[in-house]
Length: 284
Image (cartoon, rainbow, N blue to C red; front, side, top):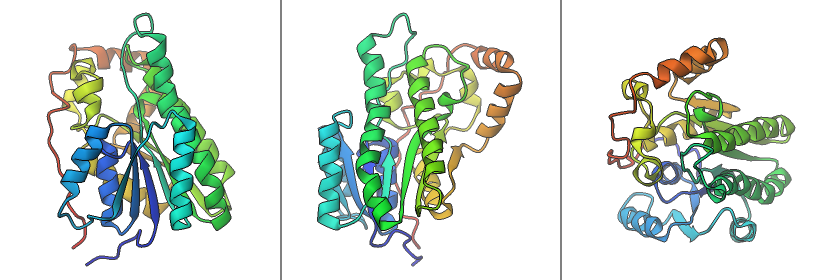
């Protein structure tokens, strides 16, 4: 059996009972981590707990219903875990609220909710966890961003692009501040991820461009694998899929042309929410 890189480590995942967060929670537990999941959705928590029964890492994942946009709830969750375990080793900010609509049509409260969950939730957890990590001179913060925070080429996702750009800028600057402290910060920028509530409940697949149908999409276990790799390498940023840096370069050189290419052909025909997946242990 391969070495478990997180054996004895305390790991926290926000938005961790479904999709990317749930795959990541299982990957962390599979690598020996003592995983604590925060999620706002009680139904997703119940489904995750039911799926966990009988798996190798049963008993290694602990759930708490929590709204990350409520500062006192986040602080209580993180500080309670530290009081119980004496350590915070890994913090993964994955929770998000997404609605895609034009600025003229999107209600202000949905715009505010997008930032409250994605950005405020991140800073609440970082501010309470970081002192524990700094005192221990070790720890790793991973914040989930998106290529949408760097590629401003599509209409209708201004609020989502704004929060992901904010997460990206915050994390990169935090990484600079933490140099020499023993604590790391990594931003993970993602392209489309199939098989999550993002497309099943929040953003219809038809709001994706037709071009996306011809590019490989990610699955939650693939994202979880990338996060494990970032924990091993301690890299400051990770882009998934691997073609994203080429898209960033294209956007830098010819943003108008890329925007036209993306909008050509109308909306996506693929159902990005249809995929059913199950995390498989990576230990042999």
